[in-house]
Length: 359
Length: 249
Image (cartoon, rainbow over all chains, first blue to last red):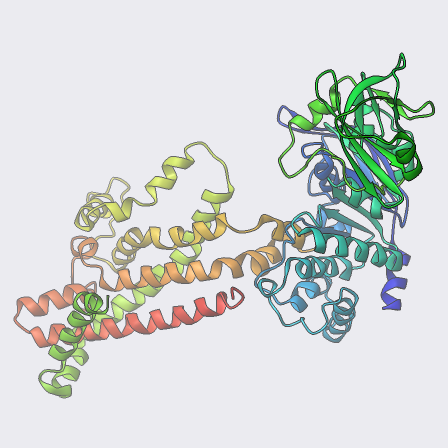
């Protein structure tokens, strides 16, 4: 296992995307995209479906050709390089397993293409099978594996050829929630071991925040913001980023985080009248769900236990809410709702979940 | 179901077989080993093998173009593929005779030659491989090819190692049906082949000749040989398909 780690460390490269645009007929999938992915980092491309994140990933891999602009891997322009000479590891949402080959042969494919000697192939494949925890399953066919196992096999297949970058297109999108969570923790740990520059596409903000060092928020073919989870959460570039990363309330024309939402017993000039709908106590913190008096819009606030006790709210009673004085807010122009309207049903607008998101 | 199958398929087969051996094995052997019968059987089997070999390649190619390429008139081409199925075979034979006979508009006079037999068989068996491969190609996961490409494979290798193994069961099925059809084809050949004994007379035409000259046992004997060849090939193709689909469990 250690020597795989060493190998991959040595060949890993950073990625640079310069002014890339991509058109499919009349449709502009990417518009002037600029991005730097540091060597050895883990970056997430996050956005709703149709935001261009998969197109960007496929363009980096060479599976799509940019209409204008260039992609650099390890400082080298890839324009003239076809996919097969780019040495990228690509993992597909639906695994793209070679279904007529065993797990062993799937992982060995890239090595055989590179004309490795038989015994070297066997040694390397066995190492990888162990690395992705498929020990003993080398002789199985993909149809005899679970979804999670298939995706780990696909990952081993991509890693086998010692790629300079690893690109994952919604790698956990087809898996159920539990497997998804396990696999992403596992991927993070794997990345800590092999340190290959990794970009993965996701529409799940929690997944992106959980394992990526750098998150790229995309919308309508453009990059809205690039930064760490904390950057995006604390200093969203615009209302789209604010709404897409983390929870958000719309209060009197402003977007505000639930933990920045203050509940007052009396009216103030900048507050909005609400009716208390539900009070949920969750140990040391709590959640108050409310409906605005003017329009019945859902609003919720995350409070500490002592704040809850001081306020002593009853369902049905009247209260007033406003952003805390130091709150992060952005104008609500409705652009966020527009972006979400066109979404596929698989993606949902962040709704009040359990508290505990990175603050 | 068993009764139905027996009535429709097994009973006639059994009748033929019992007829062929009704005068004992000696008569059967004499009937199938007489030079004219051997020549007819040989011609039929060899032409059929040539035809299915061409079909395996061309049929796959046509299916590929129909699935993967976009061109004007694709829909029309797609429906033309089935024409040999729809056309009465005797009409096909007449058409071919007009095209490749002695008054050929292209100046190709292939009538009454072995080439004519191959051409006629190619015509009637065209759709089998195309129609067997097409659905497999449609459901083939294109990401598999992209994955192979990202792993460094060139186009030839991708076809050989990724695409072809997934099409092989379809090609095998198409080949089996085309071969069975070619072995027994009568209508499409009867005009254009000229039915010259020892030269262009195929087994089915020979069988009719035997019946006309009242040699029912001889006709049945040659039929049994055709049947045996056909079943051997079907069994072989079945094995290929099983192997090709070994990963589908």
